[in-house]
Amino acid sequence: MLKIEKGNTIYPFSKGILARSMLPSGLSIETIYEITEEVESFFQSEEKPIPALEIHEEVIRILEKRGLKNEKKRYQVSHDIAQLEKPLVIIIGGAAGVGKSTIAAALRRRLGIERVIGTDEIREIMRYVLPKDLIPALHESSFDAGEVMSGPDIEENVLIGFSRQAKLVNRGVHAYIKRTEKEGLKAIFNGVHLVPGYLNVELESPVLMFHYLLTVEEKERHIKRFHHRASGSYRKADRYAQRIEQIRSIQEYLIQEARKTGIKIVNNINIDQTVNAIVDNLIQNLDERNRHE
Image 1 (cartoon, rainbow, N blue to C red):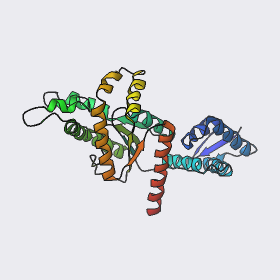
Image 2: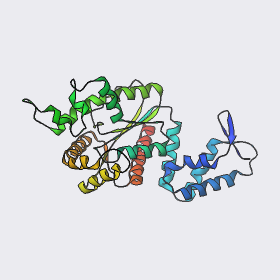
Image 3: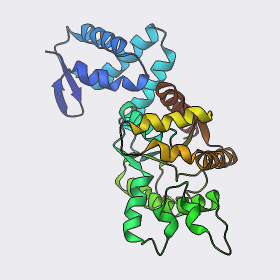
Image 4: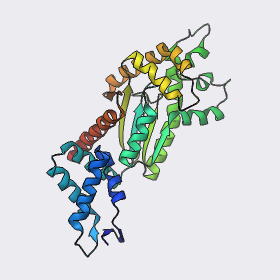
């Protein structure tokens, strides 16, 4: 039986484990299992345990032989991320209905990230601590927060309400990121509240942090997303569709802020394309950081 050596541990070779390690490459399942068979065949005559690094290098060799340059880079970056000793934070922002949670979950599977944290979860905790009569904007949806601010001095304003809610929630996000730093973890944060430029985190140790903004450029496609999402949850599509102008105004604001801060904007039309775009950008940024270190 083929055995693998990693550190001081020896365990049986598993095609399933090797296949999962190749998922970040974006290869089809069929191609992934062809490569696992090829790797197993290459080492099958070995009697001594094979260092795990040699398995990794053989996958790289096969990808190069097949001319799969982009897939090879994605496979390498996932391996590098798994080996990172630094904490890693990936931030996925965007207005309601652009697919933030879906993309965050897909990135988690692709990159083997330990945690995915939504800002709605953080807001929910803060709502229990801070009552509605104290901070009413915190207790409304991002696109409704402006309604509770109507009064003699502040006119109803979607962006003012959203901005104030986002700044409050970012205090909670800040605490979670500090916890991630302290524990040396890798995490993905996603949510409408992750406005480019709002999250000013002073970190004591080198944390790799990457911020992305998802958008849906076409209004009709955006509305259809709410109906598709409603089929698998308790969130009613009509409520969001009726507020599409407010949601789209928040998206425009997020785009403006992303352009000011140089954060990458990704039009989320297709899950695989979006995930590949983010992973490719991670590769580029990690390569640049490695060259400067």
